[in-house]
Image (cartoon, rainbow, N blue to C red; front, side, top):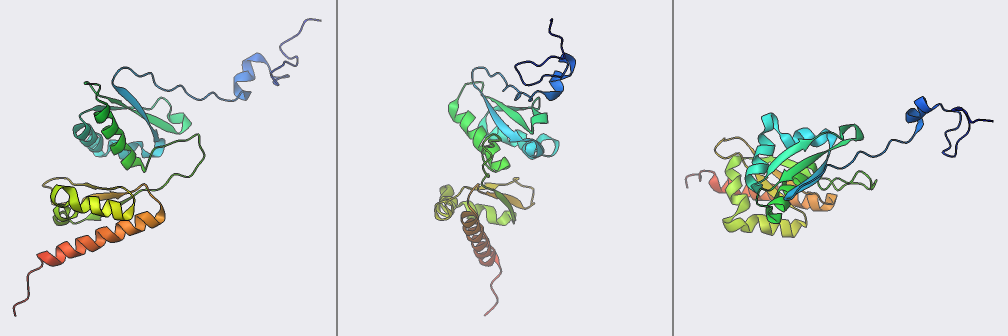
Length: 203
């Protein structure tokens, strides 16, 4: 007897016609983007793509300028829950690619690994008065380095120069204890800076 398209096959999809099989088969993971020389792909959770781009593309522009790279968002895989930032260094500089990857990971709270199923360590953003920025960073970055070492997690200050608007301090990714310590150190330092700037009461 000739087998018909309704017969049981070896793939466990017996009884399912050929034209319906794609509805029952497990979807294949989308392919990773093809990269050329001086390029790197960084996975971004789909809900955080907007955070990397920023308003009117302002954030991705800052990342490009700080890392001397070009960053494009490839959303071909968005149905799988993530997209890719394709980072290109025209000079194929590993240092520049590493810096771009670091800046992107700060925005998304750490490297995104959707296949591991493990919990991601969180990151947090604080707003601080722009007058505190210089004191938080310190001469040659000494204060921010000290606080990073004390807290045990990354602390980064992102200031829109000359705007007079609050600056953003990104803490983490790190454990809840590390982030709580970092936040306390930042708040204490800001309070110290503001108190030192307050006019002294006449004696």
